[in-house]
Image 1: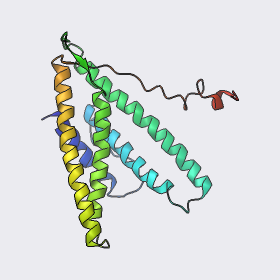
Image 2: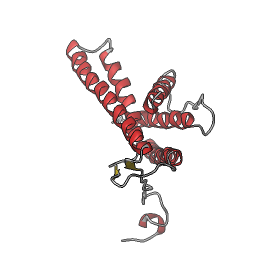
Image 3: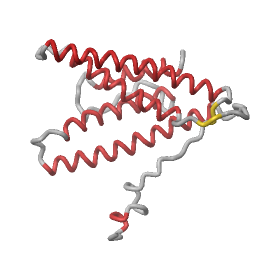
Image 4: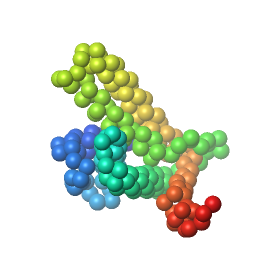
Amino acid sequence: MTFTALANNIFDLSVNDYHRTDDVDFEIRNPYELKSIEYYLYLKNWIDTVQWHLEDIIRDPNIHPADALVLKRRIDKSNQDRTDLVELIDSYFLDRYRDADTLPQATINTESPAWAIDRLSILHLKIYHMRREVERDDASETHKEQAQQKLNVLLEQKTDLSTAIDQLIDDISRGEKVMKVYKQMKMYNDPSLNPVLYGKNN
């Protein structure tokens, strides 16, 4: 089984598990062994799925400003959790292929495997929700047809992205790509780097 075949199965499971309750406060029930790559993939998609729905809720034009602020901070934390988890998944690949002999002509990819997997996880959510639009009983036929066209594109994108990720992982394993990971140096959450947090006024 390719890595993306594994990831796609887990992402489908996570998305479907969440939508059994469709509740952003429902406690995750990760079925995989703690600290396994399967565990982290499931957790990654669960975070993405909850955040997807938080982003929907915060766009309610009638939301109370105080509630919106609480949600905004929750989304900020979710983004940080998402970034931390992507870096953890990249660490898995770094460790797995640490003994690969890098070829002299090896090149660096524009993004790491885990950041591409991050896009694949989000794509599963787009597919799930676009499929729901296709199946809506209260929608017009025109709406359903347009949604189906978009769904077809998303499904093609999933196939292409999965292929590209597997090719990248294969290239890394053969030493044809250099895996180089830069930590996300987000400044706004760091009290030593954000002027608002450390009290500087300029």
